Length: 160
Image 1 (cartoon, helix red, strand yellow):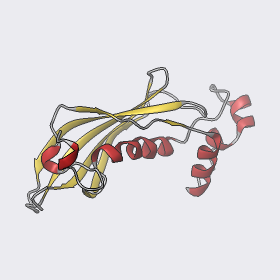
Image 2 (cartoon, one colour):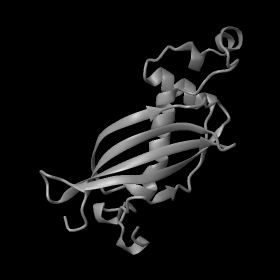
Image 3 (cartoon, one colour):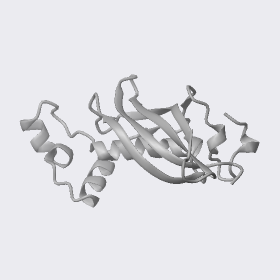
Image 4 (cartoon, one colour):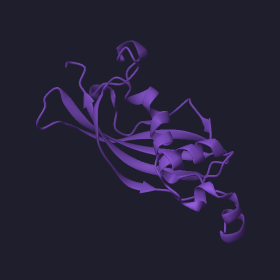
């Protein structure tokens, strides 16, 4: 990875800066709340009682309490990574694959995130850009992996 002086003025890395095999431990952490769960579920018109109905969860689920909305968890995981990786240097997200939620995340849990640089290649159609494969992983406070995905980011080259 390049030093801070070589980064985009907003802090993002350019295509050339990503080193395959490197893992970044992101500095930001976040405790997830009932408000996060309620707002996100309502904003996305998701009426799933697993996220928004404490009585349902207490009486009809194995968890006994609301689960965090998995799409909120996915977005938060990627969002935590942005400051250290792609802010100001992403042209576009090309896709997300291998999305997994291997363990539950609950209100009051705190997540931390790592990003592994899994692969990169020059763009075939645009010489000023390249594609970087990022594997994001979110862990809760006890170290349990709660979310993972592989994201393909279309990244600017420094020379552009």
